Structure formats: structure tokens, C-alpha cells
Image 1: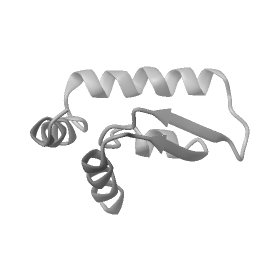
Image 2: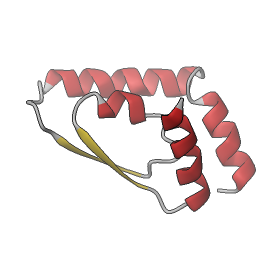
Image 3: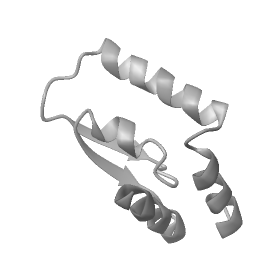
Image 4: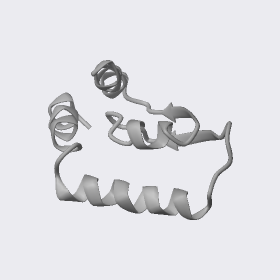
Length: 80
């Protein structure tokens, strides 16, 4: 993706129905399996980090993302 698309995605991920509903589904699946403490989680295709807050509540999160620009947007998100 290009930088403009990543910026739009970052701006929309917190409030757009698609991303919000997707996180709710992911969260309900995680809760269903009742993960124990000290989990190691991996998100492949981390994008701009929209799932960071949810996933990091359930363990030690590692994200893989090929775009250096998207990674920089994720780092901005983690600061806030």
C-alpha cells in the first residue's frame, strides 16, 4: 500500500464499523479459548497497529509488517 492509504487506515481503525466489529470478533474468539498468563501472540500483517491494544491485553505481542512506514504509524499509536 502507499503512504496515503496507510494514513487513512490509521485514522479510521479506531472508529470505522469494519475495524471495530473485527476487533470485537477477534476479542470474543480470544475470550472463548480462555488463554492463560504469559501468552505469546503473533499478528502477521500488523498494518498500522489497530489491533495492538486488544491483543497486547492477552499476552506478549509480536507483530510482523513489511512496510516500514506502517511500522512508524504503529509506534505513534503506541505512544498515545
